Image (cartoon, rainbow, N blue to C red; front, side):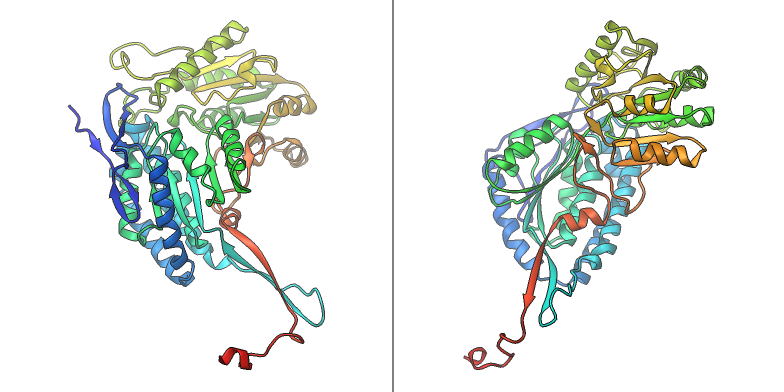
Length: 494
């Protein structure tokens, strides 16, 4: 019997329980066993954390940037040193495979160092507006900010996304995902050690916890990564109590467009890699729509089938396994419903389409990697983000047709374009209605390149200087020296 992890949350520099004393369970998606429990934070806990964060932020905002940078780099070093411990817990809590979960920790530490290095870019401007005065801008932190984390990269997003908020001079309340909250408790231990009391507060809880953060009238900056419906609810809830800055990095129904001159092997490899099967397709950036020119459609599909059939599904702690179970029973049921609906609507299932059989798959939330062809834009599978290991193939003959298919969704997060022709690449990249484009590549995030979506895929940009600046407000200061009292005037001596 596996030892049950007993986590605590962090408020005002202390590892604590909820004021209600309530806790909730976290379930291993491999076998549905209880693996941990964490506190269920209430609105009272959120208020307690806010008051601590407000006090801590006032002092933190006065600290020298060099001091903030030093602390962030020490925190990044500590995070990296606990990679194995964190990754193994993440695997058990999410179902994601061990290799990518190790990389999540490495990437998070790298992003923390990136934001530390960008700290000195928090600078204003001198504006030559008039000849007699001085006109400058300065950047000031919001104060206390809130961050809500999704279940697919719990430690990766929680650890890295606190960095820009703190470097900018804010304090933060973090709400981890209720489906996979355990790694946040390790993060709480590290934050207690590295940061002043109250600067970082980590509140494990369910939907009501996130709502209390979003609806707190004095938390004026909210950031969220997750689904479109939840993002829309957050936007609405925030507007009910105050005017707030809300950034949303939401879902995607991302196209990979392969042109006639593209390399067949490269496209097939990218189509599988881009689906993020190591996360069971549970990634907002997954290339879930493969748009193939009719001249290479059959050859690419045949290679995709070969590659999918050799993917190894099983224990995600095994480094040789390629894909594990999806995150939760709720996810499993929704994915299976969408697969069945696609079959009923006439899509042809070439690979997968169900639950794997055999020893080890009797329990847990297992979905086979699934490939549909013959998909058209009238089908729900063509328009709805599955957030699971399901990829659909479309056939096109002209560039305008490819763009019509690519843009015929409410999402606009990423796109991948495969062609050796520069003019075609530029035409498609400018016409496809998304926020992040790869040409002859897919699903690689680059340091300091802003990531975010168009349409219902969100507002705001993350992963670089844009995110750091988003945690500040711009103040304009205008000085007319002819009417200003000089330093040392009598009134200053009183």
